[in-house]
Structures are given as structure tokens and as C-alpha cells.
Amino acid sequence: MQIFATFEHSTYIELAISELEDKGINDIFALPLDSRTEERKLFDTLHKSDGTSLLDKAFAFAVAFAVIGASRGFALKWGPIYWGIIGGACGLVFGFLLDVIQNKVFKKKHRLLRGKQAEVILIVDCPEDKTEMVEKILWDNLAFGLAKVK
Image 1 (cartoon, helix red, strand yellow):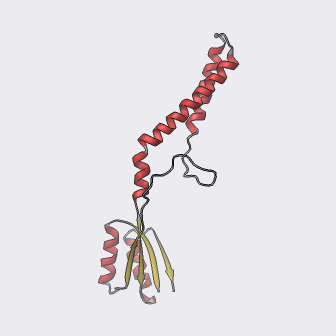
Image 2: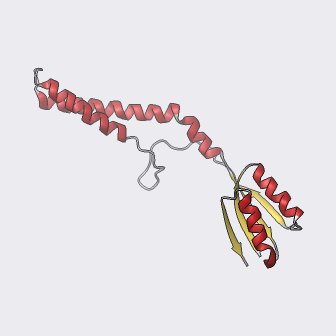
Image 3: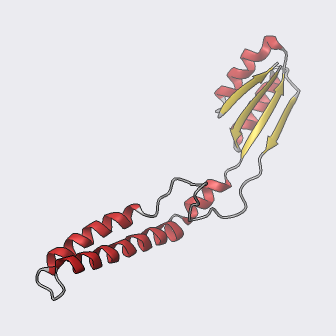
């Protein structure tokens, strides 16, 4: 029986391997996955999205600036409608630039670290009577997931 497990690249996988070898299971194969070498893209496409939106703050600032522009527009020459549109456009640009700067500068380290952490796949060949013991050892050493194949 083969048991597949994924681990974070840490000392826990070494502990799991040494514990399995102590229990008499020597047919173990560890395969590290390659980590991302390129930087993640900031702008999403229609078919790929990472869940980060650059328009949330932009729309919030657009609404706030439009309300302020419209209320101040009663005292200005062009009136509340034009100043509301101008305020909304300025708020949209301000919020979008704020999100871009925040994601590009401040969260750059977080995006790079998220892509750098590679996982390790551990493949263990063992007899069927030892599968429960192997599973317990792998789960105790913080495996992300397990799969069994006969």
C-alpha cells in the first residue's frame, strides 16, 4: 500500500521520516516541489484571479468624495452635479492609486513569501497492516493531507 502525504518544508517531515524508519518502514520517498520564481501579477485577468481587489477602496473613496463634492458644489460655480462627478472621479483615482501602492510596496514581501513556501510530497510504501500506524505518525507530524493507494 502506498501513502501519499504533503508537508510544509520544515523539520516535521524529518521527524516523520525518522519515526517511520524507527518503526521498520524503510521504503520512503520525499519529493520537494519547486517554488514560484516569478513575482505574482498585480492585475487579474478575466480567467485568473487571486482574490485581491484593487477597486474596493476606489469605490468607497469615490462615494465619499462624490458626496463631499456634491455638498460643496451648492456654494461653487458649476453646481452640485458637476462637483459630485468631479469628486467621484477624484475619489476613484485616489482609492485605486492607494490600493496599487499598498499592494505593490507594502504587501510585496507578503506576496513573495506566499510564493516561496514550497511543499514536500512524502510517499511511503508499507504493508496494509501498518497503514494506521503510518497515518498516525504522519498526522502527528503536521501533514497537510493524506491519500492511500492500494
